[in-house]
Length: 260
Figure 1 (cartoon, rainbow, N blue to C red):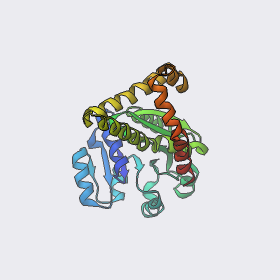
Figure 2: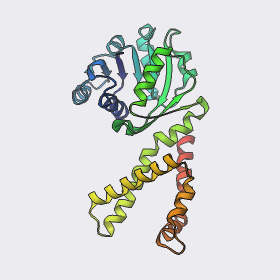
Figure 3: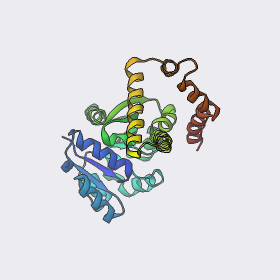
Figure 4: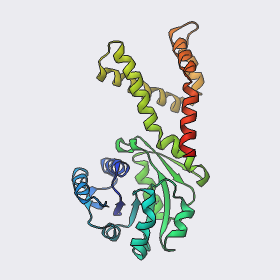
């Protein structure tokens, strides 16, 4: 079993660690983490059952595969600080804006790289994990990484040019889905349903609708039509959503993410 390290222990890193350990693909004792706020790091590592490190260098020295999970603007400084310590290591980056070519220019030649973009549902093994086609990980390390990622969600490989768009959909998507859950939940509460039951109804409806599309492959538009009886209640709701610009709003949201 390889030992892995995290540089940065924010929400995404914690979600990944939680998913990895719950899937039992790796034990918490084989995971090391560094973050500048040591008090917060020690607390989070205690909750997750992993090893806190006093420095980034310590996390790197104790690990064979390093997850670069700090803020994108911090990566240049991290690489400069660690320097040759990264030699011979495999780097897995979860930082937006950093692709294979950019890392290749910044890292020692012996350091190997794979860029990925997970989303927060990895913490319950229902995530989407985008991986960049361009990489130079050794076969053994890439197979280990794929096994690790597949234990917490659906792995989708994309070329570098599509990683940004893919990240807008799957990386930001959970926030958009949460807004839908909250909005329809509010509507249910407005009409007398208890909030806990409202969220259960909305979430299970979302899960079921997604599973139906994935398993049947039927176009979402057809699945929508299947629920809409002529002159019925559902088509009136669909018309109200169209009038409110729902489709346009989601398209604009993705475009806004990509354009920055």
